[in-house]
Length: 358
Ligand SMILES: O=C(O)CCC(=O)C(=O)O
Ligand SMILES: [Fe+2]
Image (tube, rainbow, N blue to C red; front, side, top):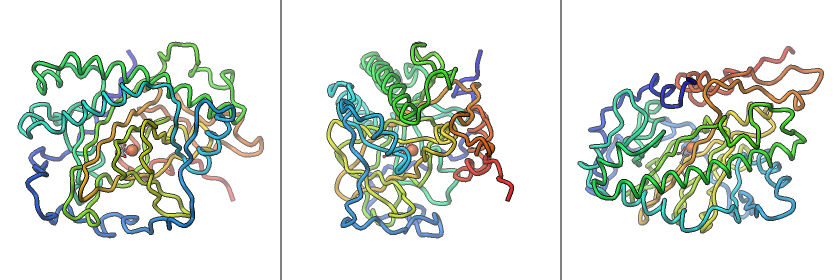
């Protein structure tokens, strides 16, 4: 049996008592433990991109004949893009938004019935990256790996089966879309199935696995001093994110600073993750991103975190490595990479980078 994502995460529990999770609706002021300064995160106050630059994350129509090259170019310059005409039915997106809203609207006591256990991955709790920061994030999350049946039964004694079906349908659609996007991006670099044997297009995707991360950012009394989800890159190949109609997601570009990803109804945001960065020998950039919060509107997001089975070795595609240089990254499995990430967090990619002789 290959190791599953659940097994991998289990080795790196989050040591935060769940009692830390406040009832956000009762707080009229930002507690000290939720007040961020540049000391807590170097990029906290980095300049937002001036609106006048007109630089915006690309919105790509998947039906456009040039979609592949547009995706490739977005992966190189932004490490992210939005997609329209992606084929995922609007009702399914509305369904998952409804489920997510219903979950986080439950009384705190009920949500805690499905709290992530000390050594577990699935369930309700704080952001997984919380352990790397001194301050708390203004958000709550719910992670799904495998079947959500056990947790959903505790949350919704009556409706859990309907909600399980919805999650299954959503994951199936996301899985297909993720593979399509990966291959469009790779084809734009001239990489074909011959070059990556483990990721066959026609293999009913039995080489891939995923997790679903539901996020809620409640209305916040002092959004400028709070952080919804601190800056990080995803450890995935690709992440497909659905966001509701409240802005909050920001991407970091060295030349622009933090750029907000405007919600476009019905569209999806796609992020290049660390594994795709490695696979493309650094041509595609895994994007640093974070979520800010809002004083009047709460925000929901659903991240489909997608990667290969935990024991598949990911190495830079030889075709993308110059014949006179060695690959930029060592080869790693998702399992090994997550272990490195659990220790080195945002420095994990540079930890597995091969040092070029001067
Ligand atoms: O809420 C968002 O927009 C970002 C969520 C995210 O980055 C994550 O769950 O990894
Ligand atoms: Fe993320």
